View: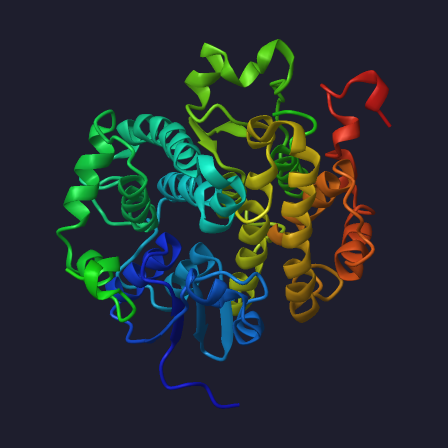
Length: 216
Length: 206
């Protein structure tokens, strides 16, 4: 069986879930090819028959690596963690690991899916309000959780999977016009993370498929 | 924990499989406008959701974070395979259900949707199950991934429970149905069933 020479990431520049994986790949120094999947053009390229063969759930991100295809951003990130353990994205202590997973899942199950593109399309006219409500309610709880767990970053002073979820979600919050004033811990951590190279190189404004008018 | 919450059920299965004794504090998501919104429960879990587990001096929320903490601290029996590729498959299926299906049809979303809630729930579950059926055809043996019970199975059974509750026709999903049936024969899935909990109302008890 022959494996491709480099992993292939199916990604959309603006997808917060794709951004999480791009950060992980950058942090771990893993070179990869990107295949952009535009979630809006042509009625949504994720619905094409070819992409459906890659991912039956018709969502990004999807990563082809070591002869398999993995979907679900946190499953991808933890596969990278299992196979390329440095630098660590999950602490060794089980209680701190639980905190990292709790924060990651809070964002990846409790906030993002409720305001993803397909849900917003179903909601229709009131979509901005809906997105703001979902994010606000999630951030209110997250701010409180972080006050217990955070050091320089979400859990203590090391970058973890939780931080990979936080920054893209703050990106979504800004896009949907959520006022971040009430969340000083979220804001501080987000700012600190955006100074790191991996968070910059993976930023939506710097991807192969970023439209000219949104490039930084 | 709430008897009917599919996320709570996942954790009850894990505790049963690992033989961990625990106390249950029921939080009724419907009575009194929803007991999860009380100040006392908010102190336990700021996100005001179940399940939440107080263990070893900490409180953990998010069902999969709880289950993986139990896995890290009580490794037998295993709920995640040792092989990284199979682990990825288990996580992928678990997240597909726990992020891609369940949150879209949880109680607070259905309350916001209003009248069309049954239709909405059916659509979310149907679209998720269509994809899941295909994924399982690649990964399944006796259970979701190969022949050992994993975290993916802990997510599957409660989600099928939700599907039945919202009137989703399971005819198009033979793999999901077969696996669900096999799992429900196991003691841990029976003892943790919503129909057998301390807070199960009399009319729903089995």
